[in-house]
Image (cartoon, one colour):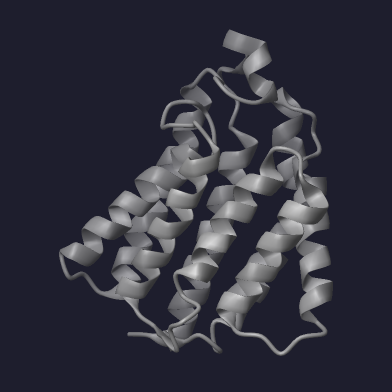
Length: 212
């Protein structure tokens, strides 16, 4: 089960669409313990990226690179650099690959995660997107190392991502604006974790469609 880097433009396009479609939801989640602008900022960045891509002939790796550059250069804030690092990692780990299989995708996830850890001190339990990303990637890696099929590994990845997202409701925020609320951040889902789950879900669904 695999797909070409060129076919992977579907993944890029669907990730952008998933953020655009969830703009209001992400801002609603963020409004509970943050500034309420997470969806607005994410939508702005991904929409600008789409406008740039509309004028390009690109593959998946190039698409992720454009998203990364836009988020870092034109959005900024706290999430711009984080997601910029994430998508840059997906791009770098795949740019020399014409065909993407489960092992290459594992390399992509690991590079994306490593990029994040370079610029952020966040760890599991801090109520950030790491609470979704870390268990999701570990589960996917374990499945690949156990020689599970691509689609099965992806399904397991998303289950772990969902569990991680739910767990953020039981955490006190230790980083970011929500950390100012202390115990009052309990009971609320983290916005960054929410957008991370949406992105992983979109990627998973797109890959499964491509590898049918």
